[in-house]
Length: 360
Image (cartoon, rainbow, N blue to C red; front, top):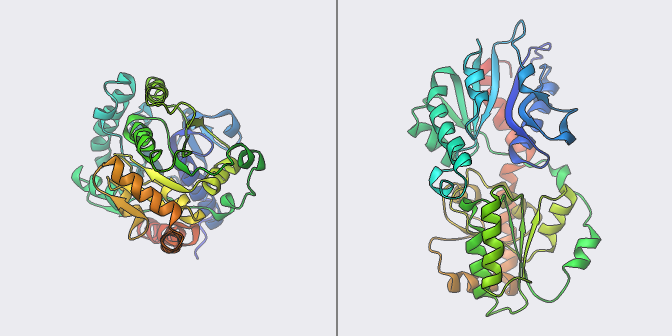
């Protein structure tokens, strides 16, 4: 491997938040670049206080002598994109998709506008982008539709060390009981369709009266979070739906381990990291076959194409109670998860870097 003697190759993300899939990928890429000898930092528009020692404000990002390229993670509209397009640098864009505005316009007009701005900026970024990498084949198809010609796929990688935490026994005790636990991980936003998961629980409790639904994720759209709470109460599920919010990495691993099945009703996923986490940690996945979900699951897990709650509830019941079926599903999922572990994704990254720089 050729050393590059501290050649600058930095990354820019919009928000640096602990546990965020985009931020986690940026940290992993930074480590890979530094191991190769690059001078590599991460800059962000918004930096969580816990990360101020690891991420720099984007206002301090200025080209240095010998700096020719910058890696930019695009997922939402931001003044950051305009700033980067004004710099005398070629961009390597990593595209994480943009939530369609129709999911947001009626509940959060400002967030919907950011998504619309992000789509407009995506088109403008073509002239400044040397290579556009998508984290799923679905996202690469989106890039092709936007007119990008030099594209590739770079999946989000799981760093196995982050999933070796022992369970949090306090959580195990809190959720113990005979009833099955359905899990979904993701921000509380309309495209994730947590409301459909609550409706599913209503039908599932006809089969398993003690069933519970665990929703892990930040309430990104407060009005939608309130709607979810009200829906649970109206359906008589107020004591069976847990909106847990953001959790530590140890607690996240614990929730995957104490759940009985991971269920996704999401109608827009650019990648779906929780699907990979579930597969890696041995939790059967039952998911609506929308956007990037079939790409991420491959031939693993169980996909459904119609939201028939009664039928999906029966499917969940089989995954929870039929041990032989459950074992087969988990084994196939573990095989699929190998494609997203750090060694496999690192190899893909090195090939893309060779194309860009010719140094690997």
